[in-house]
Image (cartoon, rainbow, N blue to C red; front, side):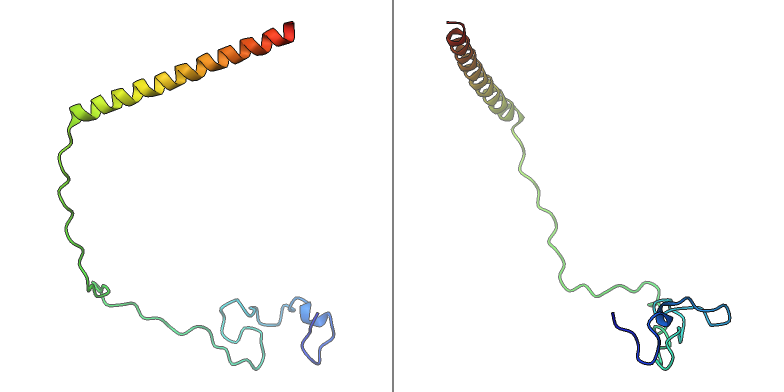
Length: 109
């Protein structure tokens, strides 16, 4: 633990007395409890003029027109994909039923 030179160990961490000015290093008040620091707070800010915007150098191209969609072809493709998915699921189900029957027959016999 480090303490400022010339102060007892606990005095640095004690609360200020009621007659001392309030504020700390992070309180944002000028001269906030650090004697001789010369910190007078953040500089004042001025708002930009009304209507000000940063300069824009590159303008994006307007969006392109999308190609038309063939809804009938999309429906046919989705139906084929659904039939394939159901077929794979049925094959997997049959394999699982056969494996379960084989496993049960080995346990029983």
